[in-house]
Image 1: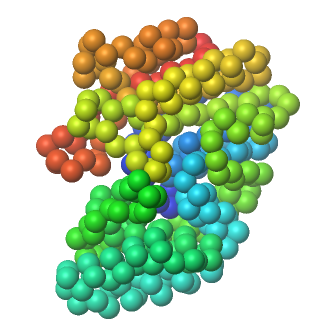
Image 2: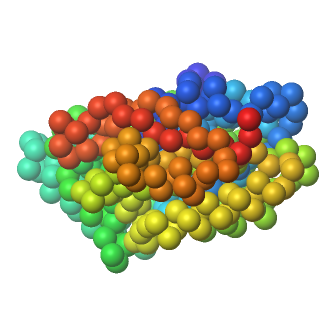
Length: 300
């Protein structure tokens, strides 16, 4: 590949700057055998592309997300990268032909309306998704109660909209291994397990650190405490199977509030670690910076 495979989208909570720490916590036996890699909340795919780069002997990968447009984008990048690049370059040229911030904002809002209201083929859907991701505020993906993308214009007048090298590198990575691309509830991924070792990495919407820090509106369904407990129960069931290793990331709520031991209580039977992360997506720049996140795993 001319360029290293990496996320083709900016995604809230992306794991790009945590990969070296996550790599240190992977099961040791992954390096000695073929295995199935399953990521039920794939998001931007930083961990996916890291695993595909680091473990070329992965027998099969399974990725899933509840966001249908995101999973369509993975299929388009894998199967139709050149067509996507061509259409995205045309859209990029049209955007840059707009004069000044106000015209670019009007163009952005027109694209957002097309994305929300029009019937589109998969390539155009992905083209507009990538455009909005690069031109909206902070690269967020947020929807309202009706499932409509509602992030405002980002005021970045010269964003890198079409990264052709990354799209081609990602397409090659997704074609080099048998990658199943799913769209639905994360529990469906259990049906994709194979004989031999299966490794799950969970990166669900994070539990908010406080009442004002909640951002998990990747879809119109909220991932509340009841959902967090359902995920814990799913992980507990996986743990009962001898051929499954799993690792899960989430917010370190007790670091913010020592009395909030939600994860320590619910995952008491598993191994809990802390890693350092930088949060860049916050409306208040003063609230961006380093903090700890939890890493929970079912193996030593």
